[in-house]
Length: 430
Image 1 (cartoon, rainbow, N blue to C red):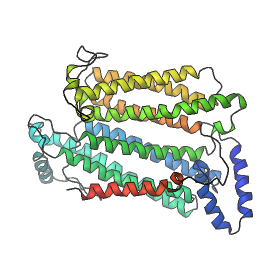
Image 2: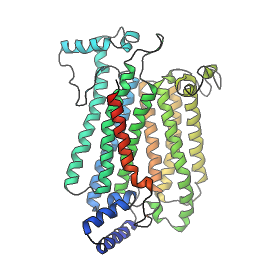
Image 3: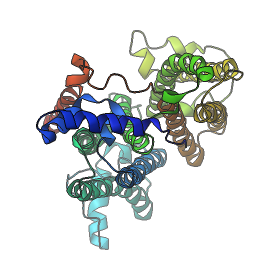
Image 4: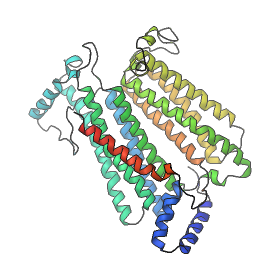
C-alpha cells in the first residue's frame, strides 16, 4: 500500500539508546512499550520478519471477518437467520438422518416465522435456510481457531509484545462476545410479534448492535494490520511542500469517516426494517420527496422504527456522504500530498460513487440477495478505504516518553470491562 520510510529506523535507534540508559533492561523495555503510542508500541522490539508474519496473519483474520459480514448479510437476505431455534457456545451438531431433520424442522415450525411466513415450506427448503445459518455460525467459530492458535504460536516465538498482546486479547474477547450478541439478536426474532399483522423479524436495534460490533472488530484488526506493515506513516516524513496539505486533509478525514460510519449504521436499520422493499423509486419516494408515512410514528422511535423515515434518512446520509467525499477530493486534487494518501483519496471517491450507485440499483430492483450482499460488502469496503486513508495521515511519533492522558492510560481496561459487561448482560437475559 505504501512504503515504510526510514523514520522507523531512527525511532528504533532512539529506543535502543533509551533502553541502554535505564536500569533494569526488561522492565525498562516493558515500560517503554507502554508509553509509546499506536504502531510504534505494537512493533517495538520486533524484527521486520516477525512484524510481517504477524501482519499477514492479522490481514487474514481481517479478511475472515469481512467474509463473516458478507455471509451474515446473505443469511439475512435469504431469511435464514431464524432457522436454528437454539444456540450452544461450543457449536451445534447438524442433523445426520431424515429423522433428525424432521425433529429440527418441527422445532422451526413452532417459531412465529414459520407460522406467519413459511407455512408452505418443504423439508428441502428448510434444509437450505438451516445450512445457511449453520455455515454462518461455524464460520465464526472457525475464526476463533484461526485467531487463537497462531496467536499462541507467535507469542511463544516472541513475536508479540505487551502492547500488541493487549490489543489482541481485547479482539479475542470481542469475538467471543459477538457470538453471544448474535444469539441475543436471533432470540428477538423467535418471539411473537406485538401485532398479528407484523412480520416476525429480529429487532433492528439488536441487528444494529450485532453488525456495529462486527465493524468495530474488523476496524481494529485492519488498523493493527496496517500498524504491522507500516509502523511509520508517510505523513510523518512528508516533505515541507506536502505538510500543509497533509495536515488539512487529516482534519477533514476524521469527520468524513464518522459520517461514513453513521451512514452504514443507518443502513442496518433499513435492513432490519426490510425498508428496502418499500419506496422502490429514486430520487422520489412513491412520487414524493417526503412520503406522507414519514410522520406516522411520533417521537424518537420514528427515526428507527418507521419504514419511510428509516429509508429517507439513509438516502439523505448516503447523498451527504457522496457530496462530502467528492467535495473533499476536489478540494485536495491540486494540493501536494504523500503518494499513498493521494491514491487512497482517489480510491475513496471512486468507491463512494460506486457504493451509492449500487445502493440505488439495489433499491430499484427490489433488493435481490446478490445486490443486497454486494451493497453490504461495499459499505465495509468503503470504511476500509477511509480507515487506510486515516492511517496514512497519522502524525509522526511525539516525544518518546510523553506522559499518557487518563483516557489513553485506562482505555484498554475500560474497553475490556465494557465487552465483559455486554457478554454478561446478554448471557443473563431471559
